[in-house]
Image (tube, rainbow, N blue to C red; front, side):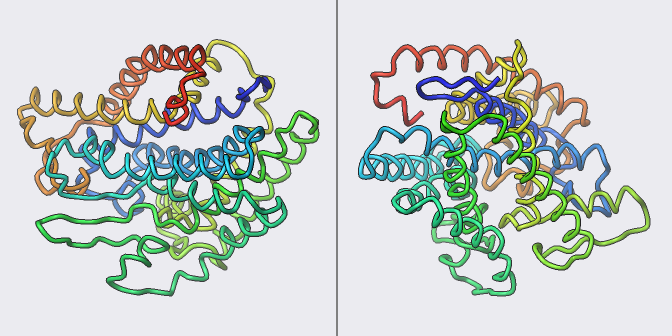
Length: 390
């Protein structure tokens, strides 16, 4: 169902929308499931398959969205001069970093004192766009080589450590820093791999030019997707390279599955990216003729991802306040001093997994009409420049 219009390709919006909806499931799990405050869902010794796969399915969101952000940057800037394209990417990137450090952090904590600066998905997208502003001035071959070197080579840095270095933590090592005035800084998404993912997506935007045949794109994307997953399987099973956290065989098949399908996300390892982007390529290769109400439903979210992202955080946290109050836990404990899964006051709160899924479905259904309205507004008010930042 790939529809080429002036600015959008429906198959890309479909994948964007799908991963945005799935992403919300993991966030809802953080705020509502009892186990979120007790153990890591990827811990083979403590987790269960339902809990793990509730987390696992959301692994595909950040890589797919970062990749497609690069693709959209290419497609949306074809009529811009190099200077105009770079200026837009820089301004967009700065806006995203500012949003992460203000609007997004407040949504996670509801704490006006901003006790924690948690630099996560939105900040990595913002900085990646700023870097892309420079990379986009080079040829496609140079961008491709740069992207592959970053994605395939960055795990060579796994044993390089600079304890206490904020700069190194921002690039390649998730660290926690105590700041003055009882504040903390956390680099949730170290930058190096994500820069490569976005620039790779920018390069692959060329394959959505109208001059490139859909059948050729399907064959190419299927080949890349299958190859990526095969490489992931071989490297993961042999522990040869590509992830600082090896696959470990345990006493049960359940534990083995959790260990095998839980490569490192922070920073995103080669194996994590092969697994997730491989699946994304296969999806993009085979959905171009899809159509129908469900496709339109997910495309709606994919056309307004930033608007959706901000809304879902605030609405989810408001619902969590309500649940905490009604369950006798107290709404005030949902005003957080750190990221929720690390909040010491949260143990003892939470609900079964079926409640997580119920809240997730209700959240998406509540957000749909708002996103539908905003999508229509954007389509009918393209002259408003500020809408390109939302």
